Structures are given as structure tokens and as C-alpha cells.
Length: 317
Image 1 (tube, helix red, strand yellow):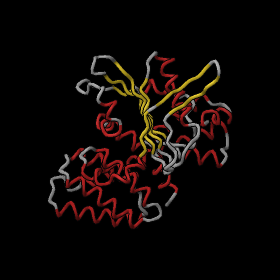
Image 2 (cartoon, rainbow, N blue to C red):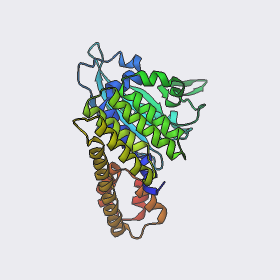
Image 3 (cartoon, one colour):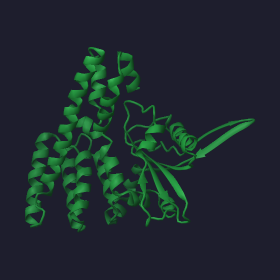
Image 4 (cartoon, rainbow, N blue to C red):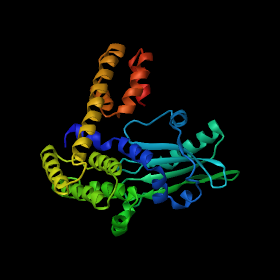
């Protein structure tokens, strides 16, 4: 894979987009007990600004998709949900402490107890964090949070195939991406199969577009196989004589626009940084190139206050 492909594979935006598009379905799929407490007739609200206030030291080098969401309990009470998707494929010892820290900050800053939930996308079958605790003679703490592991769905494939919940498709795409690492031909076959399944389920065009975008972002193919895939898919749509034959082409165009905006933002930020703090070390350039579009835009605003290289390094940390 090229460097650009690796960056795209690690990007957290597909998870954030799909969570926003289908949040009630995500809760019902992964955390049905909590979902049953929520009055879904009332609108939910994503509290992105509030979350930024409690996530002030975002860690560089790992990928997360975090959402703080305001919902309504069936008894009429307002409740907050902290949803954390651990996207990076390796375990992390400090993870339970970070879940506790975020939950504590929400309570401290907003006086709101948050129901904290984690979706684990890693490949370590033995890593199953769900609590943070300490115990001393005169002081102890036990904090438990909800946790689901996508790896467990490998043994529930028939259940996934039979489900019409959008997150069944999300899980299938994630698992097949992991299983076809260094097997591009097999990945191409699965990518086509998962997208064809969207049509066979009779989904609406917008749902197909949303899920197609997720699949296309995570199931990256080498350029040659990508071209073959697009041709096969175009023929598939034409054979089915659909009213939206160019769905795949439109989504591909949107993805290209997104990547174009990210590349342009990266170039602008690097130029501005060099003017503000001087020549950048190669390792810093590589870290900046790995930032998402959202992070690049945030850095573009922050760098206006930078005067030294330390200012940049502190922001990156």
C-alpha cells in the first residue's frame, strides 16, 4: 500500500460519520440494554464542543472516534453517553484509565454522569478492558464501563448476514478488512460481496451511499485492483438497471474530493508552520501528514498563536 492508503485506512472519520448517520441503530446493535433505556422518539444531540473541552490532551499516534451524545431516558431525564471507538489494531494498557478520566472530567465540568461505552476494533482476543479500579485500606474505587469487541462477531457471521441493522455491515467490513490484510485479491472479492449485499437487502439509496462510503474507506485496494473493482461494480449496477446507476462513481468522486481537501489543507498547514516556527523535522512532517482533515483544520487555527517549535510540539502531544 502507498503512504496515502495507510493514512486513509487509519482515519477515524468513517467511524464518526457512520455513528452520526445511524446512532440509534449503533446503540441497539452494540449496547441493547442501554438502548432500551432511551426514548428514541426524542432527538439526540452530539455534544462535540463539550467533548473537546474534556479531551484536551488528545494523544498523537493513535486513532479514536469519540462521541459525547445527549439523549433522553424513557422516564424523561436527560442523560449523556460517552461512546469511544478504539480504532487502532493494538491493545493499550492505559485505555481503562483514559475511559475513567474522560468520564470524571464530564462529571467535573458539566455535573453530568455519563454512561461510558467502548467499541474495541483491535485484534488481540485477550484484551478486554471494562473497568478501572484501585484499592487501598482507606480508599478504593471501582469504575466499570460497557465494552464490546468486534472480533467476537467472527463466530456470529450468519447472524450478521441476516441482520438489517447498518452496523452488521460495518462489523462485516471491519472484520474482512482485518482478515484480508496482505490478501488484496481476497479483499476485492469481499468488498464487492458486501456492497452487493446492500442492494440485495433492498436498501434505500442514501443508506447504500452511507454504507458504501464506509466500506470503501476501510477496505482499501491497490490501485490496479481498485480500477478492476470499479469496472466490475459499474457493470453490476448496469445489469440491475437501477435508477441510480452511478452511485459508485458518485461516492468515489466524493471520496476523491475529501482526499483532495485533506491534501490541500496539509500543504497549507505545513507552509504556514515553516513560516511561523522554521524548518520542520521529518518526523514532525510525517505526524502532520497523518492528521485527519478535522485535525488539520484545528492545527491551522492553533498555529496562529505559535512562535516556537515547542509550541507546535506541545500541540501535537
